[in-house]
Structure formats: structure tokens, C-alpha cells
Image (cartoon, rainbow, N blue to C red; front, side, top):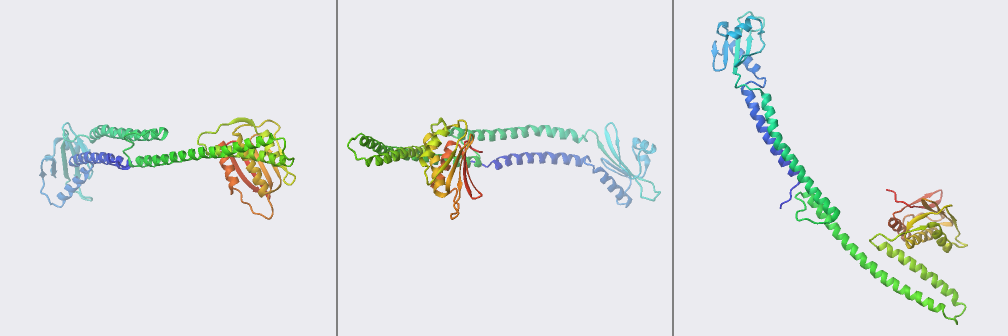
Length: 394
């Protein structure tokens, strides 16, 4: 089926209604013009009086509906009585209603003249001169039926097409006839293409996630197994103990980081736990704090329990601390509050700010989006502040 525009769809129906209305209105206007129902009677009465005044017509003049004369005796009896009673003022049109006749009367006399008036009469049969109002009521009544029909049918058709598109948007269920309108059909095609691209991207990400999960966790498991076997040896040199401890810490950090990175690749919602953030932050801060890079931690007096993914949250804190220690001056202040987490330290005088740029900041942004949190950067009074709020701001 050929698609059509909504504007064209409605325009054709509105134009059809307007044409029907114009035809009916022209018929009523023609009827009113012929029987002087459009207030044109006065014009023609004065016109006939001027013709008689200029002697362009011979008096008395009479035809089927017109009488022009100076003789009062030739006037209808009802008109004579109205004239004698003073009901017909000079140079004014008067409508005289009778049982079967409507008569427009103009007694014409030039100004500043005592000549005998010229009486101009236009008579119409009352049965032929019906009122326009009943015709208008009939026209409105008759046309209201197709008007309401077309309007309601058009509205229902548009609503049906929109509901079909809504169904596809919410359920991705395709129908045989998506839309007969070009605008909705174009939107459907664009949405269909976007969803196909999304499905392809999701499939690709699942493959990459599965590959990385296998290729990263397999060697990590081997490293952990090797370190465990080395720790069971009794004849190891004393100097190897520090190396083993370093390897074990690196293996634990690499495992946590890989779990966090793999969680970022997941399309589904990550598994979260209700944990107290204070203990986790304290552990990560103690790992990174040193004499050359002191970290001053301020904890809230009460528990700050939030639903988090442990590996993602640890990676978030690690990246925030490493960025601050790498690009800022010591000491680093870390403040844990019920609704937010703040990292603040001074900016070095010999460097320029590059907030929001770099792999660490990109990871912080992605992790906050994954946890449905909000983060912001601020540089004020030569201090760099990273604020992480535990709720997304719409």
C-alpha cells in the first residue's frame, strides 16, 4: 500500500468538506439573491425609482413582481391604507407583510421637491420566499453528519497508527502493516535500523566480554595457583618473600580491576550488594597512602550503606585517588558523607588543569553511570575537587 503524508491525508478530507460547504452556500446565496433575502431589495428599489425619475421607463410600469407608478389608485389596497396611515415614510424602504405576499415599498420623492411621489413596489410570494435561517439550520445539520464522521474516522485512523507504532516501540513486535503515513513509517524505519544496530553492538560486546573474561581470568588463575605453590616451598630464599608478596598484591589488584572492567562491558544490570562504604574506602586509602603522598580520610560518624558492585566501587576509588595524587599536590583529602564522596587537593602551580580528560576520568564517568551516580569536577581557589553523589541528578 502506498504511504501518504498526514498533512495530505487530512487536507484531502478538509478540502472535500469545504467544497461541499461552498456548493451549498452558493445555492443558498443564489436563492437569497433572487428573492431579495440578502438585503439587496433596497438597492433595486432605488434603482427603479431613479429610472422612473429620469423617465427611462414609462409609468405606470408593471410586471410579474414589480410595480412603478405615480397613481395612488393603482396601488394595492393594503399599500394605500398604509400610505394614508403614515406608515410609509418618503425615500425609505418598508416591508409590508401579508398573508401570501411580502411587498417592499419605496415612496420616492426628490429632495426639496413637491412632486407627486413615485411608488416602487417589489412583491414576492410568501411561499417562495422562505427564511434563510431554516436553510442554514438544515445545512449545518446535514453537513455535521459527514463532518463528524470524517473527523472521527480520521482521528481514529491516526490513533490506530500511533498505537501500532507505540506497540513496536515498547515490545519490538513488528506488524504486517506498520503505518500508512510517511512520517510514522520513516520513524519506524529509523527505529528499526537503530535497534538492529543496537542488537549487533550488544552481540559484539557479549562476544568481547566472553573472550576477555576467558583470556584474562585464565592466566590470573594460573598466576594465583603458581604463587600458592611457591608459598608452600620451605627452602625459598628470604629475599623472595617480598617478591611473592608484591606479586600477590598485584595479582589481587589485577583480579579486582579485571572484574570491574568486565562489569562495565555487561549489558545487563550488574549485581549489587548493600555494603558500608566506609570500610571499603578505608582499605583502599590505606593501600595508596604513603609518606610522600599522605591521604587524610574523614569518615561520617554513621554507616554509609549503599547498593554497590564491589569491584566497580574499588576501581572508582582507586582511579580517583591515583588521578588526584598524579596531577595534584599533597595532601589529598577524602571525605565520606551520607549523600556524597569528596576528593580534594591543591593544584600544582606549574601545571594547567585538565579535568575531565584522560583514561582515569573516563573510567570514573562510566562507573558512575553504571552505578547510577553523579560526578562533577570543580576548580576553585587553586583547589581541585571531585564530588561523587550517590544518586543521579536528572
